[in-house]
Image (cartoon, rainbow, N blue to C red; front, side, top):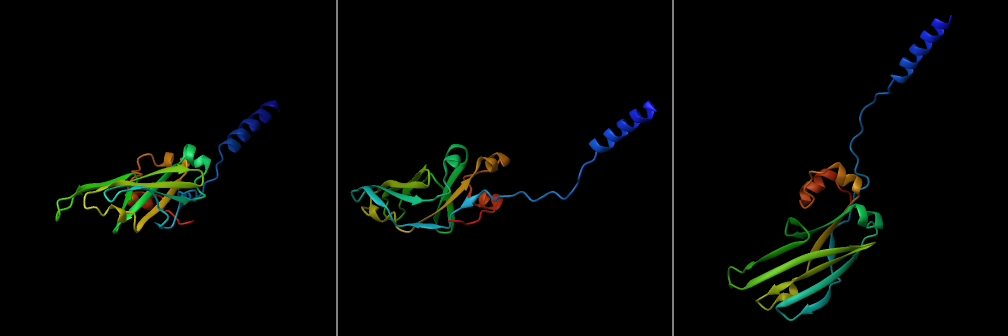
Length: 172
């Protein structure tokens, strides 16, 4: 009788510990990725503008930038020029083909809990530097650490790659 109980215990252990529930794998989620609608910056504050050299800043409130995101996640800001999107920081510099005058426009940003500060600075030898902050359109994307670690080979500076990968949805 002991042998039968012992054999039954072994069979029961094998049967119950080897059972698994199988089901369809779920689609990779992106519910934690947050993207703003496009924002046209119209609240620039002049730090310096002498007609050639300039430095402007603008603050954008974005509640999705939390302490957790600041410390472990990723905040990306993209700037639109024409139909192209560029990851900040971004610099466009060169010489005007018609006039031969040199120019440089740089965009950078810093993040704070609940907001980001965009900075635009540079120079324009034509003396028309004060118009460089008109019609600047940006998009803010907040990605928690769980997503960035899941896709380690992603080029986070490529707007189209990020948009395709995480299929960002607009919340703010």
